[in-house]
Amino acid sequence: SEILRLIDVVRPEQHLLSQLPYAVIPSDVVQLLNQEGLLASTNYTPADSTLRQAQLNKVKQQRDQLGYHNNPKQSLNEIKSAQLNTVSSMSADGQTLLNHQITVSDTNPLNRHSLQMGHIGIGQRGDNNYIDLGVRAGYHDTLDNPSGFPQFFDLEGAAATLRLYDTDNDKANQPKSVLLQNLTVIKGRSFNPVNSAKKGKTWGASIEATRVNDGSQQDGSDHLVGSLGYESGWSWAFGTPSAGTGEMPPQLCYTFLAGTAQTGRGINKGFRVGAGVNAGCRYQINNRLRAQAELQLPYWYHGSSDDSNVRGHYWQPISSLGLQYDIDKKQALRINANYEWQDRIDANDDVQLSYRRYF
Image (tube, rainbow, N blue to C red; front, side):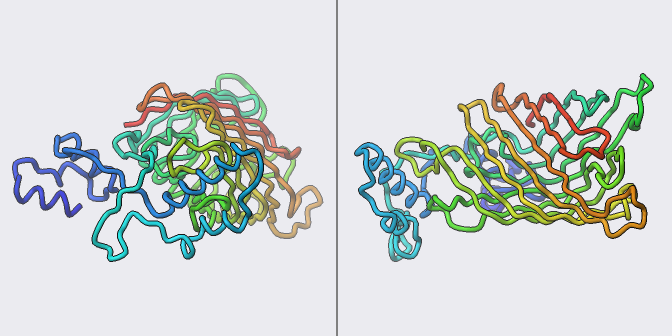
C-alpha cells in the first residue's frame, strides 16, 4: 500500500509495510493503522449507489406508512437509475466531499472478522462418521458475520478441507480413512438485487477440486474431481433495512442458471458436464444468527454408453441448509446439511456441526 510506504518514509522505525503480506486488501491497511494508533478519527463517505438506496428506502417506508402505493413504479426506477438520479458524495467539480444526512452502514472495516479461518467439524455421511479439518485463507461467505463487509459479500479463496473417516467397523462401501474433501482456488457470487439501487449482474464462478457423487451407476460413490463452474441469474432483497441507512433490505433470494464441467479418474467416462438451475434464500435472523437454504437442479451428461446399467445422463437434485451462530467476532458454530435426490448413489445425506475460528 502506498500510504504505508509514505508513513515508513517519515516514521521508518515503525516498519508498517513489512507487517503485512505481499498481497493486501484496503481493510488490512485500515486495521493496521488503527492498531498502531494512527487513526485520529473516521469519516463515513457513502457510495453513490448507497445514497440512491437510502432515497429508495425512505420512499418505500413512507409508502408503507401511508398504507397505499402513492409512488408509481416509474418514480422508483428513476431513483434507482444512476443516469437519472445523479446524487453523489462528490461535488460536481470533483473537488469537494458533500455531507449527506445518512446513518452509517455496517461496513466499517474495523468491525470485520479476521480474513483467515480454520474449522473442525464432526458429521455423518450416509452411515459413516467423520471429522473435517479445514482452513481458508480468505475472505468471507454468505453465512459469515457480515459486519465490516459489503452487503451480501461472498468470495472465498485458497481453502482446503481434509476428511477423516471412522473406519473401525466393517461397513459396505467404506471410504478411505483420510480424504481430501475440497481444495478451492476461488469461489464466489456477486449479488446485485434487481429491486435495489445497486447496479450490475448477479453471477458466480468457481474453480476447485471437490468430491462429488457419481449418479450414473448403481451404488455410485464419491470421487475427487476438478470442477469449473459459472452461474448467471437474478437476486432480490426483501425485509426492512436498517433505519436511515443506505443498506439494502437484509434478506436475499436468488436464482441462477448454472453450467459446470468436471473431470476426474473415478467418475464414469472420466468427465461430466452439467447445466441447470440453482435457487435459494439467505435470511438474517438476528445480528448473531443467519440461515441459508438452496436447491440445485443440475442435469449431468457423461456421454453415451453401451452398458445398459450405466446412464449417460441424469438429474441429480441437491437440497442444502446452512445455519451459523456467532459466539463472538472470532468464533462461530455452523450446521450444514444436504441431501442428494438420486437413488443410484451410495450416500445421499451429509450432516455436519463445525466450530470455526477466525484469525
